[in-house]
Amino acid sequence: MRATINGKRVTDKESLIVLLRQKLSLPEDCGKNLDAVYDVITDPGKDRIITVKHEDLLRGRLGDYADRFLQMLDDACQSGHVRVIRRN
Image (cartoon, rainbow, N blue to C red; front, side, top):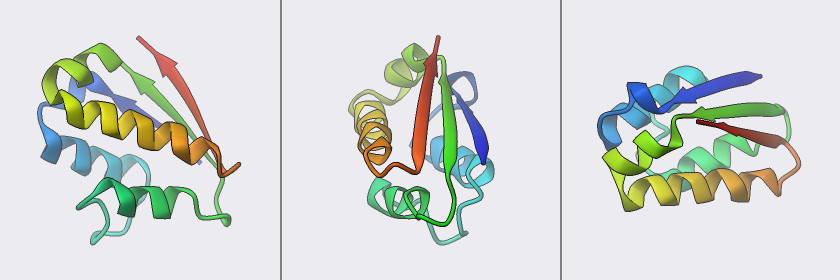
């Protein structure tokens, strides 16, 4: 599965969660926290390629939460089922 998370579409934490649900086909009850997102995207049944665009906008709009989100993606790469591509 391929998904793009575009920082231009993120204005706050809630809009990031909505975008993650849409783009990563997350269950409706998932996304209340980044640990739940991590658990779903590292599921061995589905490999994912996630492109993050406009990381600078994410950081500017979300501050520390953007850092935690990006770190979660980096950690997810260690599972072997997630690949992250970063583009600005």
